[in-house]
Image 1 (cartoon, rainbow, N blue to C red):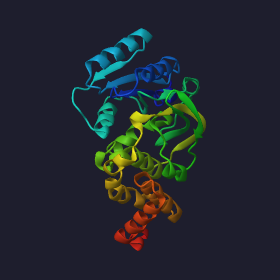
Image 2 (cartoon, rainbow, N blue to C red):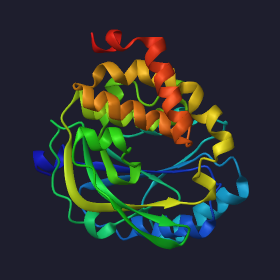
Image 3 (cartoon, rainbow, N blue to C red):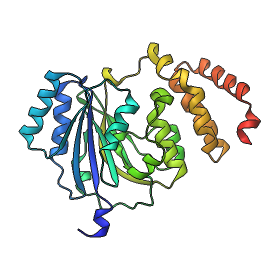
Length: 277
């Protein structure tokens, strides 16, 4: 194997907690089965379901499709960040693509991927959103740091430089449900990233991964100060800083009037001049 292909080898990490419809899992596995790009050298199945019946179902579907893989059975209840980090520990290639059990890879795009350049922290692709089993007419393309600040790239549309994310100590539960957002923004702001205007996958929206308004305080709002403390100093312009504040607060407070009050309060507490210094 030539050096270019060796440093471009990609691991697909398929993560599951066994909470989605089995038909979604089948669709996700079918998309992996259809991949034949030689850059994809490893598939890791990280099963955190703690459900024997679901695990047996998953093993059966993998065997049925003859997907060559490494199967890891998690035996303890872990947080989101701990799950992702434990899976990341098992990756032996320079690049990783996380595929959650309800998202679908665009295998036609994956099969056309060419060698990746390690000078980039990640490759960010477009993605489609689908509602349940139906396609939503929405395509998201992230082309700049501004785009990434305003809308988080999804795992299904991002190929991550393994060493770069390990240098950031992986994903931290210190940021609550913002942990993927913080990781992506840090990767984009601390290193160069490559944006591609092609669709890498489909991100599924449904009840199991929806953030209900009455649950948002626990998942988002109480972590705002940690997120601001971590990300605000990394953003190079005032415009990006404003976009960042608006975006983070909008996740926690869907009511726009209340959101504006929260932003004003955050600015007063932390001090606008201190942020710009």
